[in-house]
Amino acid sequence: MTTIVSIGSGKGGVGKSMLSANLAVLLAGKGYKVTLIDLDAGGANSHIMFGVFKPEYTLADFMLRRVDSLQDVTMELKSFNRLRLIPGMGESMYTANIPAAAREKLVRHIHKLDSDFVVIDVGAGTNLNTLDYFMLGDYNLCISTPEPTSVLDLYRFVKLAVIRKALSVFLANDDIRKTIAKTNVQNIEQIFSLAGEAGQEKREAAQQAVKNFRPLLVANRSGDKKKKIHILQLQQLLKKYVGVQSITKLGEIPVDTAVEQSIGAFQPVAGYAPKSPAAKALVEITDNLLSLIEQHKNADTEISESTAAPAVAADSLV
Ligand SMILES: Nc1ncnc2c1ncn2[C@@H]1O[C@H](COP(=O)(O)OP(=O)(O)O)[C@@H](O)[C@H]1O
Ligand SMILES: [Mg+2]
Image (cartoon, rainbow, N blue to C red; front, side):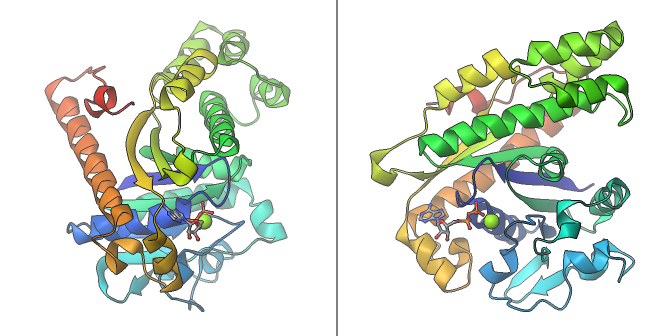
């Protein structure tokens, strides 16, 4: 079975592509088959990070039906065994308005990819495509820098992702869904009461969908201008207004010139400068993610109706 890891953020330029590329490299280095998909229509550049300037195929070839299967647009990356890349497509009228049927087909094909892990760089912002791609993940990683604008945009991004998740219990043509889409939601309770108008079971389904959503946080560029993200504050806000039960910090990447150098050398920093502080932090993040996945697997098999929270949560919140 493929495990999908999505990587999103509220703001651009905060390190999504850097994190996606390195996570993909490090997972492949552990022996997993990995596909990295660049779904960032606003800034598709994952291929550049690997020194590929003119990919033979991109996601556009699949979306515009020039090939039959998503697997056909995956490319090998020299020097990284087991890692394949699906280069993204640029910004266009098409990518801004992908028809729902094409999006659904893409999702079906992502699940069918021949990989242990699919890492999705979903891009920044809160348009519906982005939110839906983000929510595709079995594990949803959000990344932010300590800048207040980045943290605030991350809060907004998670809030809208949660609303989208709550809406998923309604069909697209449902009246309630249309009403909610037009409402300027301040508090998740508003969504639950609107959902409740369609019946108690809809309210409960929406609540359950939100309860099950546990995003993971990667704090990037920590130490930049001596700043850190106030995780506890972010958690409290998300819990109070958005109903997100926990946001587990997966790790923290220091600001590091090796990252900039590696981008200039067209190689992910994990391969380019494995001893650099950023590369070490990325290894730790990958390990934390793998142990979280392992814990979930064990919890699923040992306690069938488990409500157990991942153990990494409590001690890594400072
Ligand atoms: N930890 C870091 N230390 C130093 N520079 C970083 C770090 N993380 C990201 N950067 C720089 O920020 C830029 C934007 O990163 P990128 O991954 O492209 O962001 P996004 O995909 O979110 O737009 C990169 O060019 C890189 O040089
Ligand atoms: Mg990017």
